[in-house]
Length: 262
Image 1 (cartoon, rainbow, N blue to C red):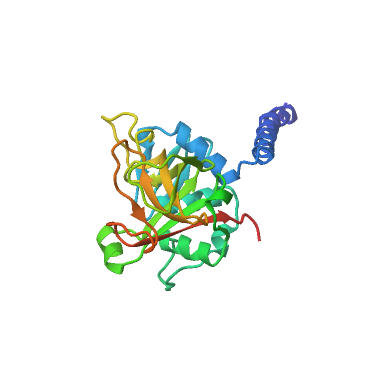
Image 2 (cartoon, helix red, strand yellow):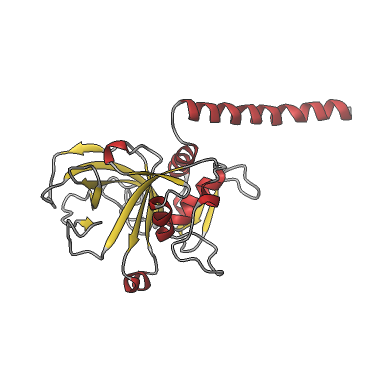
């Protein structure tokens, strides 16, 4: 009876392993990066009570995890992306480098993502918006130390969730640029626009994981030079270069494609 019981217990384990293998194979055959597939699954299934923006944390859980029977997240923007890389079993984290290293630095921040992308440490840098693909990482850094101190963050990190779609330019119009709509997935304290999953229910706005559409601005060479939200009456342009100035805090940005393996 004991042998028979062990054989029976092996069946669901084998079936689960087979299902995981087939799911991974399907993800790769469809050209969807593993970390983006995980992000999409999480954002589609997480409940508001299990969704929390938490500065300095990097906790992401799925049903079936040890001590977890649900989808949950407690992380800031960079912690969320790092948690996905780790779950997808990428070596990206081990290849990244700190902008300002110290013995006390344990976790990567937004500025470190941008620094790593610029130096292609764990990422292939994507220089043209025409080459951007779902799964790429948009990293933004605040350039002034006082701004970092005031906000408590060094910038922002988000996952590109769609191929950028060129649109007719609308306010704010910045001469010398083209506008593109693109879906982002990120952990954030504010929404991207009306379609953002964090504000679909106006009475229950969420700070944490969400998906929404923004407008990226690119120059004639395809370099991303700024961003605007997609709210109907959004009139603010967030510049990433002095060539296209704005009234926002000085920032710069870079787009990178994570390198999964050494």
